[in-house]
Image 1 (cartoon, rainbow, N blue to C red):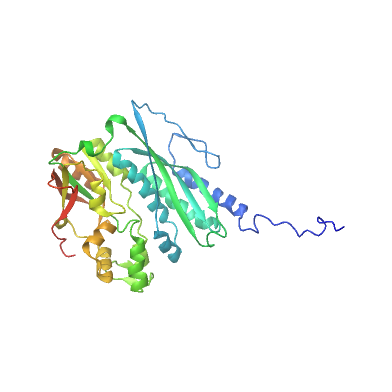
Image 2: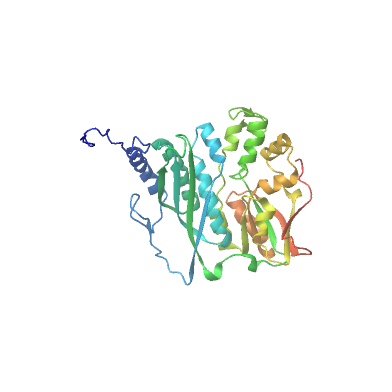
Length: 358
C-alpha cells in the first residue's frame, strides 16, 4: 500500500499564496515615526498593539463621542497613474475630520485601513505619511490602523484606503439645524480644488474622452494636469474650531459628494432656506475646464463637485464680520455666500445668480 505522506508535494507557504508577512512588518516599522509625529498627550502606548488607547484626561460636563468613516474614492486611480502616494492620505484625513467638526466636535484620533494587492512597504509608508500630515493639520492623533494584503482579489498595484475618526463635543454645544435662525449669514471657505469627490466623472471627461495626458502642462493651472488633480483636500478642522471658540456659530456644512446646496440642506431646518449667491465667487479653472471639455450642464456640475467651496459656516448676523476676520487671519479664503430666510417651498438651500467669468 502506498504511503500518502511519502509522495505528498511540498507544503505551500503563505508567501507563495501572495501574502508577504515580512513586507508587512517592514511597513509597520516605517509607520512608527509617522504616528509619533501625529500624536497627542492623551495617546497611551504606541503602534503595534491590538488596540490603540486614548485617555480622556480633560473634564467634560456631558461629553458626546462623535465618529465619522469615509474613503477617497477613485482619486486613488490618479495617484497610481502618477505613482505619487504621499498626498492621498491628506484627502482621507480631511474627509473624516471635517465631517466631525460640522457638529462642533474636536477630532481626537483617527485609525486607517489600507487594503493592498501586494504590500510595498515604501508605498504604503507614503500613504500613511499623508495621513499623519493630515492628522497634524487637524490636531488629532494617528492611533493606528490596519494594512491588509489581498492577493488574488486585488492586483499587485491596487490599493484602497478608508479611515474612522473620533471626536468629542459637549452635549450642550452640539451644532446643527436647531440653532439656525432667519437672518443668519452663510460664509464660504474656499476649496483647494476638486478635493476628493467626482473623480469618476473627472477621469471620464479628461482622461478617457479628451485623452489629456496627466503629465501635460495646462496653462490655466500653471502646472501639469496630474498635479492639479492630486492637489490635496484642504483640512478645515482647526479653522472651524477657531470659529466656534470666537463667534456664535450655528452649524457647518462640509461640501463633499452631492455638492454645495445638497450638503448645506442637510443642516438646515424645515421652514428655512439658505439662499446662496453664485455672483460672490468664481470657481477655479479646473471646474471651467471640466464643464467645457465634458459639456457638463451646470446642475450636474453643482451636484457633483464643490465648485470652489469646501466648507460652509452659518453664523449669527452680528458675528459675521468677526467670523470673516478670524478666517482671514488664519489664511483661509472666505467670503459672504448668502443668508438664511423663511422658505416658501421644500428647498432648504438654493443657488441664485450666475458666476462671473465662468
